Image 1 (spheres, rainbow, N blue to C red):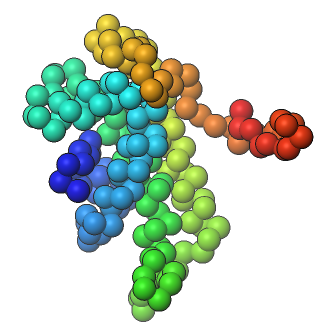
Image 2 (image 1 turned 180 degrees about the horizontal axis):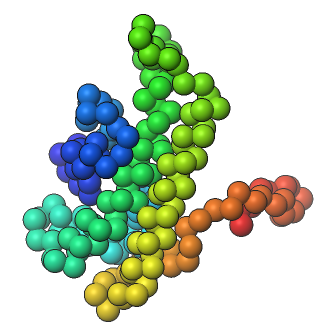
Length: 179
């Protein structure tokens, strides 16, 4: 894992989200890495994303790249990571199967409450993702690789999903398509 660059620190994640300080970093890392790949990379596009990761790894981030990470990427990444981590902080996969953590002094959170929490954190993440996209669109000259052609094009539109699903017939099969 030493070659993996994470764009937000453990300390910042714990300071600016509801993650308790006693949560171990090895429980957080998979969710943060997945969130970077699944949510941040599509917003930035592969070229800008890789440019930022390369500069971060080399310690050569420009002032504008540091601003982008600290003021925009980190907020979206922390909230997406928290949304991804919530189910896995409650549930653990161990040798004997899937377990739900419990404590003698704490009340268990039900599945409906967990879904609600994930939805609330996802709403917050979408707000920060929208801010990131708007900032990049308004500052294209500062981030020219944002508009370059690459294998994963940046999503310049709104990252919000309204939850509407329609069925479209394709090759005599029903496909659920999100709009």
